[in-house]
Length: 368
Image (cartoon, rainbow, N blue to C red):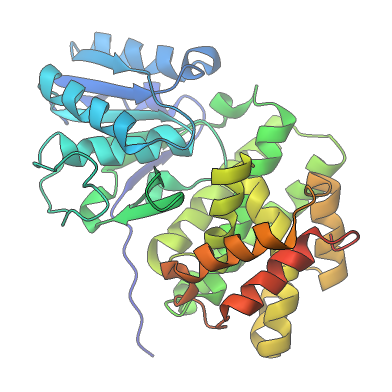
């Protein structure tokens, strides 16, 4: 047996973990830049962090201009702000968008990158250290070396990656997710589920990543049933956050599959939330995989604890139907997806025509 596994993030999990581990912040320097959106002021995360920084006499600025599905323009603005503040470290507070943006800002604060050049820049180890505090349970970005940004040139979302983009520390407190609306809770939970499923299909999967994926799904799947019925307790939110973190640890080592790549077009062109886009595509993807590699697909279904029909019904209960698409549109999305890196990262290989068939099957009446 040969395997590799690497997640160099110090993790603090539990209620009030920011307050209880305040000394950690002090170890990163004297000046911080907080990278966030507007909602962190509503869930209490920003107040908790500011309180700790003030208590430890750490100077800080707040860059709260992060948009959904951040663009390079937004990230470049943040990089300039980090340089102007002379920040010693970054604190990312929020869902996937602020956490991903912070990774780009960490690079631009230290490395000279031409405007719009982050996608092709060779990222070195010289980045600002980061602390990540997720306020949704789904992206797992707090334990990955990936950042996803909108690529206007290629009309899709695109990732940048480097081992130096792993945060140094992550604080996970489910209190910050308590007031999330049902749709965001559902979409992010489905994103986490998708990470573990896709990780098991990766050519880079191994016994250890599969173990984490299976544990993540064991935790997440009962919670999706509660979400489908509209019942979600604080204990459930803690489980969703923990399962999301495990799923992030999976893809940190395996990467994702064609589901993410196909889903990027639904997000870029149709404004579908990222996790919802993945969930709409998962049933047809699993059916296509079963035709090509039955044994692997059955292993994934066992981890899900469901049959093909049951997973389709569960996702339909959570997400409903997707919108109607023309053949021309789906052919365009398949063409874009066929160029994505994750297509080659999957143990089950698909042609552009087969990707189109998955997309078509995802939005036919009754496919879900």
